[in-house]
Amino acid sequence: MAKEITGNPVFDKLIQKAQEENLQTVWDRYNAQQPNCGFGLLGICCRLCQMGPCRIDPFGEGPKLGACGADADIIATRNMVRNIAAGSACHLDHGRDLASTLLALSEGRAEGFQIRDPLKLRAIANEYKIDIENKKELEIAGELAQKILEEFGQQEGELTFAHRAPKKQQDIWNNLRIIPRGIDREIVETVSRTHMGVDNDMGNLLLGGMKAALADGWGGSMIATELSDILFGSPQPIRAQVNLGVLKEDEVNVLVHGHEPTLSDVLVTASLDPELIAYAKKQGAKGINLAGICCTAAEMLVRRGVPIAGNFLQQELAIMTGAIEAMVVDIQCIMPGLAEVSKAFHTKLISTHPKAKFKGMEHIEFREEEALSTAKKILRLAIENYKNRDRSKMDIPKEKIDMIAGFTMENVFHHLGGRFRASYRPLNDNIANGRIRGVAGVVGCDNPRNLSSFSHVELVKELIKNDVLVVQTGCAASACAREGLLTPETAFRFAGDGLKEVCEAVGIPPVLHCGACIDNSRILTACSEMVKEGGIGNGIDELPVVGAAPEWMSEKAIAIGWYFIASGVSVLFGTPLRVYGSPTLTEFVCKDLEKIVGSKWYFESDPTKAARWMIEHLNKKREALKLKPMLYETVKA
Ligand code: SF4
Ligand code: MSK
Image (cartoon, rainbow, N blue to C red; front, top):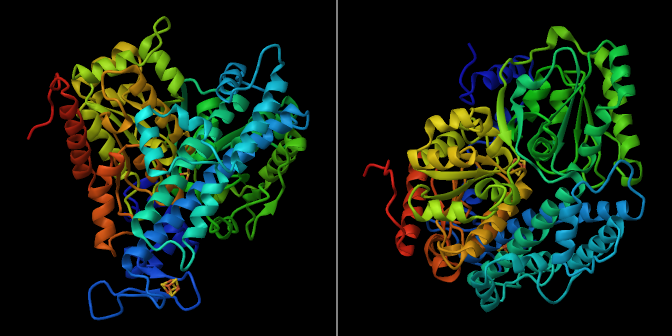
C-alpha cells in the first residue's frame, strides 16, 4: 500500500516507485524546499538592485525599508506587478507565434497547415476591419496576420478585441487610463516602471499591472484563442478520455506537453499516416498512441479528441509508467526535472521550440516550413524507441475515464439557444428566473501544496450543488475530468435541481470544459455576450459571475487573475497572492479595488469555505440586480 502523498493512490504508487529507485519528483523537491522563505511568501524581499537583496521585517524590530527606501507596500506590489508582466508575456508571445504561423501559411511557407475554420477567419478579419470582399482565404489570412502582428507593436490607440468588452468596462479602463494601447508596449512599460527607483506608488503600480493584464486577456490570449480556432478548427463538444490509463501497453506512446498547439496539431495528423502506422507495426507495436499533458493536451483534446494523460503534476509520473517512447515539449509549465526522471527509462525527451531548450533533452526545432516533415521525424524516432521499452519497468495504471470537452463561446451560444435561436437569452433568463445562481470559472494549475485535485473537485461539486454553472480550462479541467465531473452523467448526480433542469433541457453538462488556459479569454467574451444579451447587468462587474484558481502555481495564473479582476470579475485564489507582507496592499486588493473596477480578490484554501464565499458573492450580485430568489434553494444557512 503506497503511503499518502497526493491523496490519489494511483499517483502515490508511482511516486513511491520513483522514491524506491532514488528518482526525485516534484513532491520530493517541493518537500526539500520546506519551509519556504517567509519573506518570499509575504512578498517582501526585493532583489531588484545590487544594493540588496533587501527584506522587510513585517513583525519585529528589523528593517522596515530597503536600502533605497522602498517599503513593504512598494516591494510587494512591484514583485506582483512583475509577475503579471511575465505571465502576460507568455500568453502574448504564444499569440504572436500563432500570428506568424498564419502569415507563413498565407505565404505558402507552412507545411501541414490549413485554414480549418474559414468562417471564423472572415469574422475575425471583419473585427479587424479588413475588407474581405472578393478575397481568397489565404489573402485574408495574410492581411489578418499582418494586422495582428502590427497590433503587438502598436504604440497608440486601443486593442481591437478590447472593443468586445461592454461599454461600462471600456469607460472604466479609459477613465483609469489602463486601456491597452498595444500589446508589447504594456509589458515593456510594466517591466520598466518596476525597475529600482521608477514607479514607487502602490496604486499607480497596480494600474500599470492591470493594463498589462488587460493586454493579455483582451490581447495576447484572445488572439491566441481566435487564431488557434482559425488554424486548427473551432472546438466542438467531443467525448474523449483522461488519466494515465489512456497510455497503451502495445502501442508507441507519444506525449505532447506544453502550450502551443502548432507542432502538436501536425503530430496528430502525422500519427494517422498509414506509412508511419505500418512502420510502428513493423517495430512490433500495434499503432501510435498520442496523448497529452497540460495545455497542449487541452488544445488537442478540444479539437481532435486526443486523450489527456495528465495535468501539470503528472508530467513526471507519466514517464514513471515506463511506457512513453517520446515526450515532445514546446513551451511553458515543462519541469526541468523531467530529464532526471527520464534517465531511468527509455523515454526520449524532445524539445521543439527555439525559446525553450532543456538540459538532457534532444532539440528538434519546429519550423512552419518543415512542420509535417519534423512531426514525422519525431514520430519515427519514437517508433524506433519502442523496442527499447523495458517491460519489467512498465507500470501503466488502469485508471481512465470518459469526459466531454470542447465548449466555446460560440457553441455554448448554439447549445443554449438551439439551432434556430442561437443566443445567450436562455442562460440570462435562467439566471434571472433563479434556476441558475450564476456562472463560476474554476481554472488554473495544480500544485504540490495541495492534495491532488482535491480543492478543484470539492469546490466544483459544491458549486454545481448550489446551481452554479461551472466553466473550466487548463489543468483544473483535467483534474475535474479525472474525477468524473466532466461526464454529464456523473455531474448531474451532484448538480442542484435548477441547474440540472437547464442542463438537461439544452443538453450540456453542468461543468463545461472550454480548453487550455489561453482559452480563459473565451470566458471574457462569454461575459461580454451575457451583458450584451441584457437583463442581468450593464457591465461584467454587475453579472453574477465569479472566478477561482484553487491550486494556482504559475505567473500566468497571476496575469489571468488580474485580467479578470480588471474586467470586473472577482477572483478567489486557493493560496494568497504574495501581498500579506503589506497590510495596505492586502486591504487594497481584497477590498478597495472593488470601488475602482467593481471586483476584488479573495484568498481561501478550504474548498468548502471557498465555495461558500463564491456563492455568497453571486447572491450579492443577484440581490443588487433584484433578480428573483433561487427557484430550488439548496443552500442551508
Ligand atoms: Fe533593496 Fe531598493 Fe534595491 Fe530592492 S530596489 S534591492 S529594496 S535597494
Ligand atoms: S498548463 S499554467 S499548470 S493550468 Fe496551462 Fe496547467 Fe497552469 Fe500550466
